[in-house]
Length: 169
Ligand code: K1U
Ligand code: ZN
Image (cartoon, rainbow, N blue to C red; front, side, top):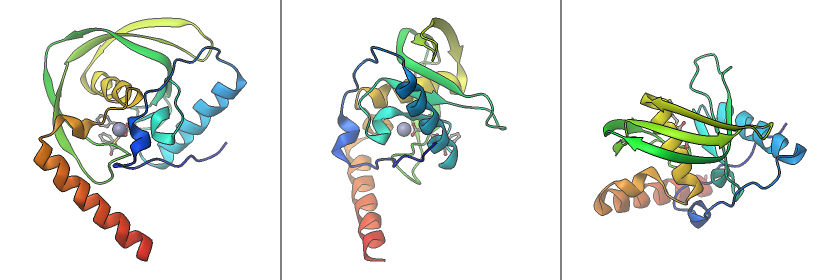
């Protein structure tokens, strides 16, 4: 297995729209395993392939404390959205920044698992928020796009300053 590099905002590659996975083969299974390893190493609860510069519709999620309930969602789609909820979100591509985002409270969703089976399910709470956040990544959208332009501009400047300092060190 291998750790993958996670892209950081404002990297333009985070704006790529991912393409559907046509065949779920050994390469896709290896990519999913590497994405899970990367997500655990970065202390995340989710990761989309776009964040590791792979333009394929693949998402991994694990909300468990023990990190033993991995979900791999291939070609995930939202079928229904219900209600509105505000939750504090973070993003591995926007380090050290958390803010409140309004999203659907519960969703009906569909995806393929690593065996190629089509799964349909319903969920709410953090899993519903996380699936919406990760599908946004596959469409080139970031949670900070929901913030005001002023907040986003301030954040961009702060991150660029931090990354400049890190390259000097
Ligand atoms: O997609 C990502 O960048 C992963 C992201 C997922 C996410 C977290 C919170 C709400 C929606 C989506 C993270 O894992 S951020 C990492 C984090 O520090 C965190 C961990 C547990 C709960 C909340 C945030
Ligand atoms: Zn994210």
